Amino acid sequence: MNAILLGEWTKMRSVRSTMWTLLATAVLMIAGGVAFSMIMTASWDNLAPQMATAFDPTSISLFGAGFAALAAAALGVLVISGEYRTGMIRTTFLAVPRRLHVLAAKAAVLTVTVLTVTAGASLVSFLAGQALLAPTGSQASLGDPGVLRAVLGTGLYLTASGLFGLAVGALIRHAAGAIVAVIALIFVLPPMASALPGGWGRYVTVNAGQQIMATRTAEGALGPWTGFGVYCAWIAVTMIVAAVLMNRRDA
Image (cartoon, rainbow, N blue to C red; front, side, top):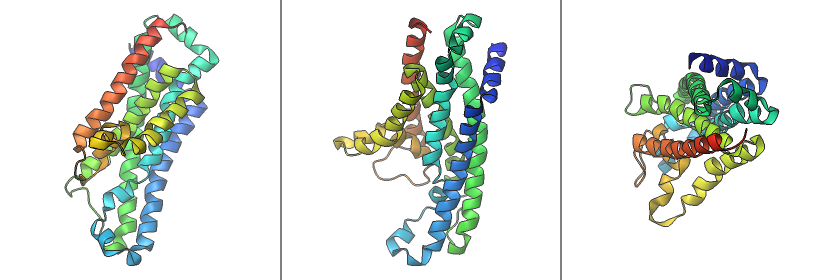
């Protein structure tokens, strides 16, 4: 298994598109938080009183996670769809006949890589954002309730989004189609589901997963770890279906 992991790591870092997408994930995370923090600081004096009262400096500085999630998911798609596009997947399966080992190795390498990068990017985004929000007098610190969990949870959320992309990519096997599907699952379906009666929308993909980044739980929303668990369940089901089809279909 160590040889398979090493092979997947070598493939990932040697493909230019995957490394650029990984970099884009970090840049979007940091740039989004910095930009939104600057905007909020500049408009602080004009905020309505109710908005100032509800102001959450942690979520402001982690604003880039929404954009970074798409980049992380696209990275997950590229990790596997690129091999199908070039036909390299046949060589991979010849070298490793147990296809589930290949999928597991890709998931492991992707998890470690994305978590390392995004956890660091989330911390940088938070610290930079709080420094920019200092003139408002409403900045947060890592010692405040829920803040450290939210910052580290952002890295977990982005890593989970990368695994979601990997699962969808393994399922569809075509980069463009898989990325469109991921966009729908992350950006289109959740807002639509929020309009469903009975609160069912809170269980839909990122509506649940993003709760781990929140320091304040809205009324009726899932708890941070419960929501993240629901998001992981979506990913697990998709990954299981992809694994079954990977074993049955021709490369």
